[in-house]
Image 1 (tube, rainbow, N blue to C red):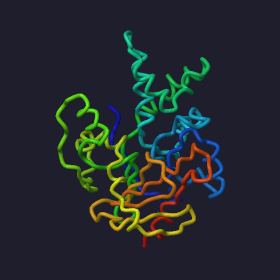
Image 2: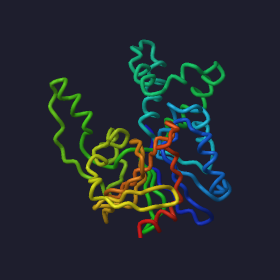
Image 3: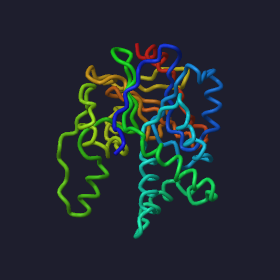
Image 4: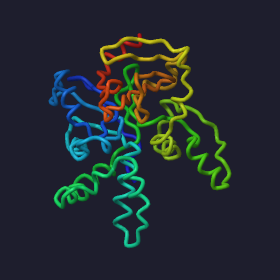
Length: 279
């Protein structure tokens, strides 16, 4: 099983950037990195996951995993790709994972030529399979976390809806945001579904009571409960939004880059600058 929690030391030589869901939009990332003068010799880039699907260059985004300056967590789209690649390797396969992959933008997998298919299977699959669910960078006041959806216990709404549909008992365990100290392998192993698929926390944001802050990266909506003292700033994606949002230490930065319309963009944030926005 992949390591669930990756701890990375603070960057004492350069800058740390965090990018929203790429979804195959490598061209947009290249533009943003050039705009900030990204220096791969000293700077680092952290991704909230969902490198693939929907956009034009999923393979290009996966190849970023070879770069020593690139760090990504697993997103639900990487999860669907792994499920498919594992299932097709079995002698008897119902191919349900293929249907799920295609319905979520994964048709590119089936359009690959033989060389790219071999690259995906032999070179990229092990890298994707090794992606952590949470990355923690640094220690103390400057520490931050990166996850895909939310760091919260209890089943997702979708999981409970499916259980109810199947006549199964609902998971009524408490829904609670974890603290810095609780981000252990054992605890994270019990919340893998919320880490990849959760949208419960985002739905709790009171938009009418939130305040707007203008930043170089666009509008940031700050909820009445922006930070939890027990949890460091946590960058997440998963839910495409028209503006970034901060609620309960979770900063939602997926701006739906793959849509490529007037209301979407690829968020690339300098962590050090983000701290100044929140002060």
